[in-house]
Length: 124
Image 1: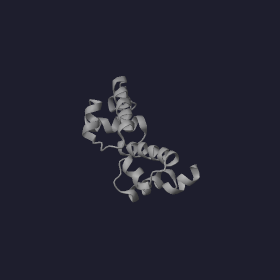
Image 2: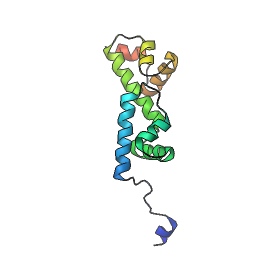
Image 3: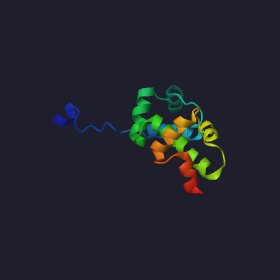
Image 4: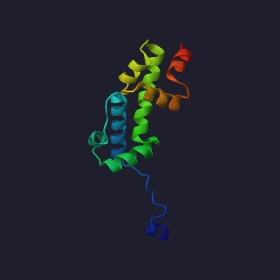
């Protein structure tokens, strides 16, 4: 009873089924639209929740921030394009939503461990 009074033992990470469903919808939307500019305001409208609740709920479910999730979705798409197309690195960067090919290459290396051209050579 004392723990309850002080808030200890309270499961703060509990999300309702509705919240989980909304985060799942946002995640699917991000994966389908990762190449486009995505704003927190836009995503919170899709989730039907405030931006703070969206950020906290998203991190609880996915273990990463929304920005990290978007970057990962873009990198996964880039991996596919690198191994299945002959598009240039700049074209792939633009296709997945980055206007700067060097920024894309930097993020790709941070996430995958090798540069995009090296990845393409390994995958072929």
